Every structure is written in structure tokens, then in C-alpha cells.
Length: 535
Image (cartoon, rainbow, N blue to C red; front, top):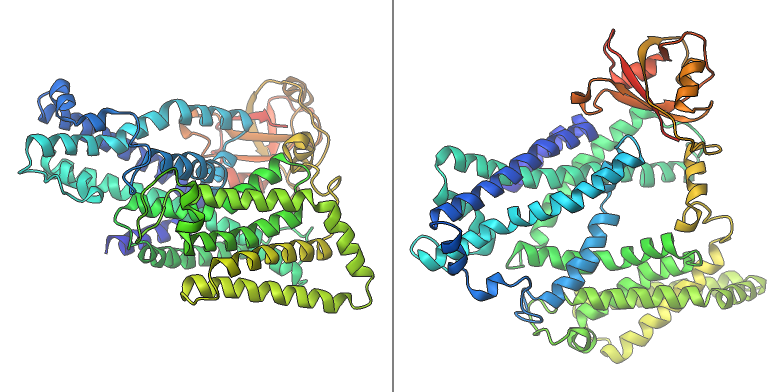
């Protein structure tokens, strides 16, 4: 019931509030959650008679910085390292579109760096106490007062149980609200990000492919908003239904571990190699996703043969086999596929050239594609329907053959030039990325911020005009990107917008904006605005 209620509330305020609603509700909910977590931890220590009593009640194993190296199966250090420290961390910091959108929403790169630093130095340590504090207190109480908290209490409900014991009705209600806020914060962030991805990376490319719009056409903001709202509702329903798929796991953390160990590896390899390895090819990418995922399915089907040799002695659980160590196996197979296919790029190009020159090239490719699809279907049938096609000795060679077929198919059909098509997309060409983003030459001269009154002028062009004196103070040129915001700091950038610097004027102390900037930023007449050159 709580899941559906939360989904409805979150779906409504995201649908009508968008990114701004998500960020500001997350800010309030984050403060609530941190305060509630610290409050429960402090009250728990006081309830137990102080820090010394609390510390001595904890078992020795609970005082160690890490869990057991490879046991128990449901929670061990080596498994958590591969699943959370490697796959999970990359999944959260590099693939979580909700987090990426927050950094993109900052006014400039400098602010984004400050946010990242504050997150590492302050938020992560505090969050560790907030999340773990309730469990530590519960364990100590279960030792001192087993009549209040049974040692066999379900881990997922222990925070609520501790809060009920330590707080009165009013405070307990606040703590429960904070728990719901934590759920809402995560859900709202991901739904907002998913809607943005759908609009920009699914809906728009499909419309371009159907020739309903051209790539260079301006975005229809009203239509994009409708599509975003509809997709938000749809993904809210899908998200709620997905909860039931993970109900078989005894704890939320194990369900989380299974998700990251399964979903993250192929995407992690694709993103990292795409950003840091210039020679990484489309064939490597597509084969990593299709071939890597299929090899991962074989690991799920044959865990003792494929994952156990890499499991560092982790016990085998027949119900949920190697929930954590599957991450290591999945990373290895995806990395291997990506590296091998990329290193064989020249040979694949020669083979693709021979196929294109063959008079029966279409027939050859149809056969290769058909065989690839058949092998994928066989693998999926063997895993999900538990049908025996000859065991691992048959399925593994077939899957490797399918990987080769996918690599050849991608090389034949995808036109690729690493000198031009990856320019600005890899870490070594970041300057080109900046120029691409700006749409012109970079101006990286350091300037000052300027403050002035604003005035609306006619025109629909998305540019802002400054006086020559203010342009000189900012070290700005025509075409540079600029950020303008209400000068009142307590607004936190709520009344602000980004634009482009236009031709200078001679009216010193006045920033000339258009109606579209006023609609975006909602400036207040008579209030001074601050301008800062971005790039």
C-alpha cells in the first residue's frame, strides 16, 4: 500500500513540477532524513546509558570496519567490494542520470566541482552514520533488552522498530515521514531522469527516423512537455510493478546487489571505454551489450561452473547463487568481449569489406543475423524456461559464435571513423567537447561578475546584451555563454537562466533581456540581477 501511495504522490508532483520540484523536494527530504537518522542514533546511545555502554554491548564482529571476507553468503566483504564498491559506485556516480542532471543543473562547472567535493567529504560520511546508526543501536538493544528487540528481527524493519521504542508519537511520525521522504527522493529523481531520457534519446530519434522532424529543428517545448508527463506516469507504473520482481530476496540490500551486479557491468564497460579509450568501436559496444549480456545469462544458469571459480570461496546459495560475486564474473565477460572485439577491429573491417564485395552479400548477412537471433533465443530459453540444449558445453561455444556474428554484423552496417566520430566524446578531446557545446571558439579568460538592473527589449532571439564596459569587466565576447540570476543569494538560483551574449550597447548599468528570459527566470521588476560569463 505504501508503495502505491508513494508512487501516486511522486508521480503527481513530478508530472506537474518537473526538475525544479524534484530538486527542491529532495533538498527538504534530504535534510529530514539526515536529521531523523542522527536523532535516532543519538537517542539510542542515550537510551543505552551512554557511548561506553553502547560500544561494549556491540559484538566484536560489529566493531570491525568490514564484514567477513567471504562469508556469510548474504553479506561478505569481497562480494560487497565487487558489487557495490566497483559496479555499484560506477553505476551511481557515472550512470545515474538523476545525479548527472543535478550536476548539469548547477550554474557552471566550478559549482559542480564544489558539489562533488561536498558530497565526498561531508555527505558520504554523514550518510554512513545515518544509514548504519539505527542498525547499530538495534543490535545493542537486542543484546541488553531482547524483550524489546528480538535478535531475530527482520533487518529491513529494524529502523522503524528502533524509532518506535526511542521516540514519542510525534517524533515517531516525523521519523516515518523521513523514511517515506527517502523513498520519494529516490523515486522522483529516477522518474524525472527517465522522462528526460525518453524525450531526448527515444522520442526525438524516432521522429527523426520517421522523417517527421529534422535533426536541426528546434524542440517543440509544448509537445516535449506532454511526452515527458505521459512517460513519467508510464514509468511510475512500471517502477511499482518492478518492485514485485525483487520480493523473493530476503533483504532490500540483496535485491539492490542483484540489480547492480546484473545491470551495471555491460553499461559500465560501454561508458568507460567510450569515454577513456579512443579506439573503442561500435562493434565493441554492441557486442558487449548483446554478447556480454548473453554470457551473463549463462553465468546465471550455470553459477557453479562459471562464477564459483571466481567467487573467492563465497558459499554457494542455491536460491540466490552468488548474488554479489556475479558482479565480478559479469565484469570479466563484458570487459573481455569489449577488448577482444576492439582489438580485432582491423580484421573485422577486412572481413566486412570482403562481404560487401561479394555478390551475395545480403544473403550472407541475413544468415548471420538469423543465426545470431536464434542463438540468443536458445540461450534465453535455456535460462528462463529451464530447457536443456546440451548444457554449458553446447551453449558456451554457441554464445561465443554469436558474439563473433554480432561483431561482424555491426562492422558491416555501421559506418565508423574514429578520427571524426569520437572527436569531443573522449577524455582526450574535451576541448572539442566544450567548443561543440558552446557552438564556437572558447573564451577562457577570467572575468568578474557584474550586477545591474534589467530591461526588456523586443525580439525572440535567445541572447542577452550588456554594455561595452560590462563586457570588458566580464572579459566576454559576442557568442559567449552567460548565466544571469536574481542577486538575492537566498533564492539559490531559483530565479535564473542561461543564454548567449549578444552585441554590446552603450547604456551602462543595464542588462537587456528578452521576454523569453523573463518567462524562464521570473525576475522581479526593480530587483538587481547578477551576470557571470560561463564559457
